[in-house]
Length: 153
Image 1 (cartoon, helix red, strand yellow):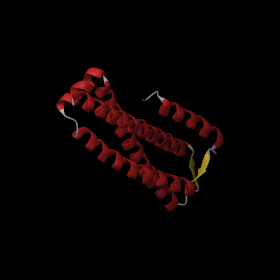
Image 2 (cartoon, helix red, strand yellow):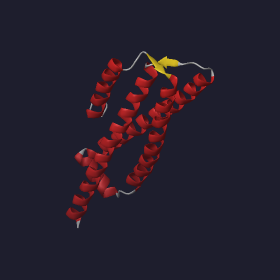
Image 3 (tube, one colour):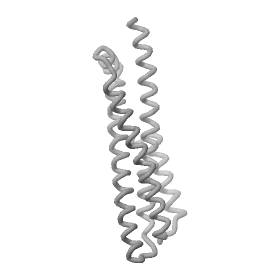
Image 4 (cartoon, rainbow, N blue to C red):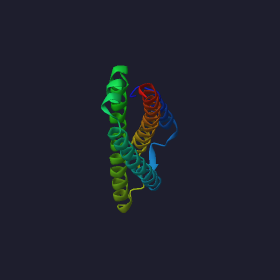
């Protein structure tokens, strides 16, 4: 996952943003970007956490042993851990950046360095990409469970 498609797309985004964003980024625009990022990540984080709880509470012991024998169970769990951590880090960063930017606006600071925006965009991109990868793994998990149930029936 770290070096998968989501990591590759994030790296491309960083390179693109380094090329197109001004060094001095307007604080008002940065605040809006951080706010949007926080909103999106809050929703995705809560839905992902609820989905993860449902997936982890549903399997029976025979199915878990079957998945472990196939090597799939540890892969899916590791992917969920990485995704949960990515979502959490991106959310905390967005909230902190929004707070700092609000403070800057209150002190009439007109610009901030573009690094903050680029880091936020990269964390958001990676977290959403990891979430997509985890969702696809969950679909694969459901298909594997259906095959397992047909095989043992």
